[in-house]
Length: 265
Image (cartoon, rainbow, N blue to C red; front, side):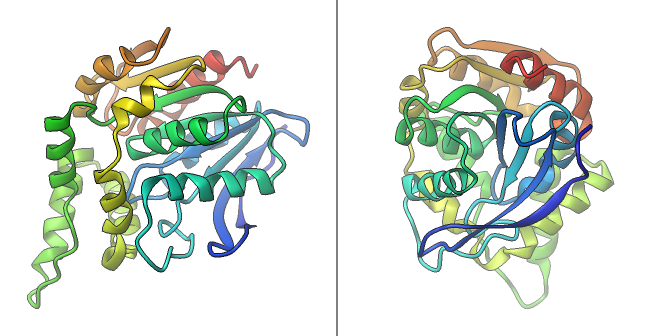
């Protein structure tokens, strides 16, 4: 029987010192699964799926440095540094082998973790993979935007509308993603600036672990998954019915895809 979800800080080396995390665990001997959220959100977007995967594994959601409840990086970092700080949290938990689950920019973090910690990831499951071609990458970064506060407060409406274009109008999910994004409004672009210079296509080409790309058929991001899957030798692409974000809107289906592909039963 899995425990209830717990949230706390993982102690890591300086300069990060702490990574905020949430976990549901089937026990100390269960395999590790790490959930890597999209930016500028947090691991809360995975909490419903973590609850289900945690029936079979130690299911950890890690808040990226400067996102969610993790402390800020204080200064601008490059993208590999963000991944390195994730690895420090993974190491602090004693996870020698692990499954990675990424969403959007979290897929890039997963690719970097695999590059920096070779031989440790056993599987990668990617939800809502962002564009891999240069033009699509540039358009994606432009849509994510940068903070631009104005006196009349219209920047608040602009952020809501931008997130609604991505996730749709369902209010419970919108409250979640808006709160997570606006909580770090002044610095949410730091990690995005780092990702702007990251070559996701090159990162995916280096992956040699079993990889599954999962798409919701009503998600605009689904159109990018076939091109991404073609870059990873032997990768599979699974399309499921549903709205974005699948691990939030249909956690049973998302968890089943993870558990089945990674052999966690």
